[in-house]
Length: 104
Length: 279
Picture (cartoon, rainbow over the protein chains, first blue to last red):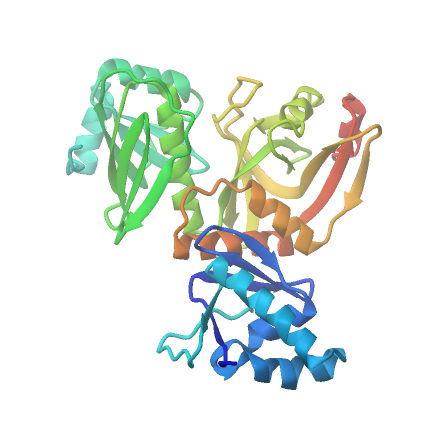
């Protein structure tokens, strides 16, 4: 299985509201409100950390879920966000000069 | 389409006095419309009566080139930015606006519907730069405070304005004008009318509450979370362009608004008593 790297897109706006991350895609203006698990994935999407590491080191310990199940869910979630231009996915590290969007 | 003509302030004043230009001030943002044609100029003055202000110094300026009559279009306007210039067009108009000079030009037939659309787009872009927005909402002033009633078509915006008591001053039954001024939000009257077919009053007031309308069997106010408020607000902001910077501006403006203004759901029946809750 090849590694999957994810990076937050620069073409989004993100803010924390009521403790949840809200993201708006500049591509199609779709609005997302992220769950706790999705928020962690979003925050860790630095383009350098493999998705498998995010699941293993951040999701599984915090939510007490099986790694395989959590990885499958994470894959589906990242693909959905990528389809709206919110995340970028690659099989190699994504290295940009410009910092990606973060929630404030 | 011709490029915008260069005008000095004096030339604009001469054009206004000659009856071929008119300054329309909506939301405290004056726009000089160089109609170029006395009949079209007169149409603009009638359409925006109450919002014409020859004494105002224009912040934006548009030159008009009149095209043969065309049916107003139902399609969505397409708005794109190329560098510093915004281009907006629909079947019945083409326009461009340079953000550096704050001047633009419009080609349209001499009808008020196309002009309404051009002005809404221009105002929404100008407002986004300063944290404001146009909102699908009726609004009115009561006891010196503005109340907004937002919802999609059929939610009851016009109904709320029809039920309003005599002391409520109508700002609009269709498109509310929201500006961030001195750290607070104000609502302004607009000439953009819905089913009521009546322009709002050219007044403004600090915003007290934004209500999202839900029709029901009784009148009551329900709280709403900031997250829910932001989601609903974003669905109702007039938003013409899928531009990265504009999306950020609008998103930030919506979040900022719901963080600083009271937002609630107003469940109402078609009964004037609902206004007892709005004061």
